[in-house]
Image 1 (cartoon, helix red, strand yellow):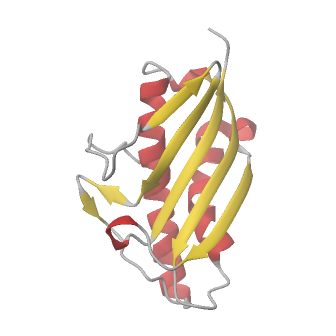
Image 2 (tube, rainbow, N blue to C red; image 1 turned 90 degrees about the vertical axis):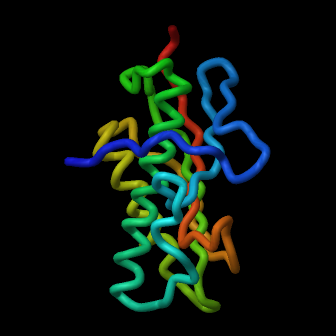
Length: 147
């Protein structure tokens, strides 16, 4: 896909970037941040151009999730059995109805990376604000193959 994982960064809050429980990895929400800077700010307007940019923001969130997932897999993303769930949050204007369309940016990346195993249950909601005024935040739950 011609994409790269981001450089390491410091979380904006006091939390773990992921928590493993057996073969399940709970990934903390990741905003559209690259190299410590928010790439897309909210609120997302209800226009085609704004939605397309927000989909790119969701893709960046997914790349950040993959970075942390790779850590949880000891560097081996081939250990991913399936993506169980994504939660997507869009910092948007009131009445915004395209949150599912925006979060497709993250969904499509996971499907491209993991094929059938990338399909997942999902939530996509509009919110009044996110950390750093980011346009999008996404979290995930992933199951790994047994060691």
